[in-house]
Length: 408
Image 1 (cartoon, helix red, strand yellow):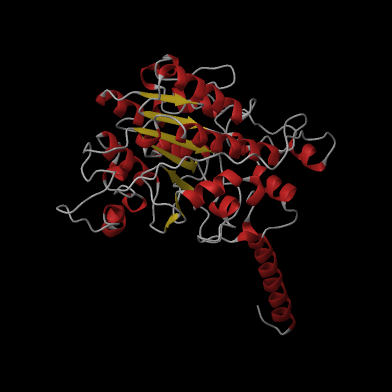
Image 2 (tube, one colour):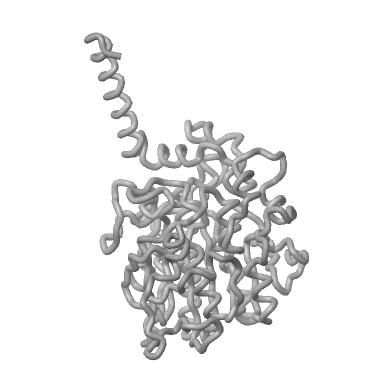
């Protein structure tokens, strides 16, 4: 048990005398990275988005929105650094956003996330102190060090001190409120954020929800699932395009993940999801096979900014040192135009009828969305479900044969 609990602290053998990495060995050490943009998208496994990425460990058969649906994600993975052995410790968004803001999903959250408590999950995560980490969120750690930050498109972690009402730390905009908000395009959200940075400057830490790949199912008159995924992907590319052509590029790092892996299937593990790190200071085209999780993300941020550990999980985790290089490459990134056109879900479809009445106001309250998206995009059962059906048939046949021969 001790070995398992401390494994994340023993990923890399470190020579302290000869250590050279943009992410410092000690928290708060010297680093060229002064700006971190942490992008949290919604609900996909690794295979669902990058199963067709030939340079890494994916299975294209499991692709839900690969290829033309996510050309920017694929271009970022090919250009910069990615991980094919990153696992979210969440099964749903309420855990995922707790982990991305506080490095832990506490006992109260774990016992109650799957139940219907009759309260908005957004509201409860923000206002119910029982869901907060014992120590602090990332935002309080940044405040304690006097490090400028801004939260975009999310309410998680902003309950203490009513930070959500403080526009110095939280962005409020007509297209981009600090909520789980699917009613504007992610491209429009990015445009609002860029306009703010061009006016006020880029904060040291930008925590950024980018939720539209969650989708609204096939509900009329909302965009189709593939249109929302394409919007989300283009917004991701547009963010990197602006940043890499800006004065901030040489001192910046972008981390892109999904908050949890519940949509799609994966041939390694149901918790495996995407991890892309883009910066002049990462290895080009590098695929890390190191077993990372949210604790390693927070350890990386903590070492860059000199933050106190949020929990034992990031305290006992090493940063993602293998992804970085001491030789920067300042070549900018140009966003790939979306290949899937904007389109609206038509009325009267089976998928639309199945989507009607689902709750898309809170993350992960749309029961059955995973099955709905797979059936709409791919049709039929995925490989794992087919194997279950086949195995059930084999067991049934064996039982019949055993009964006929007098067996039990």
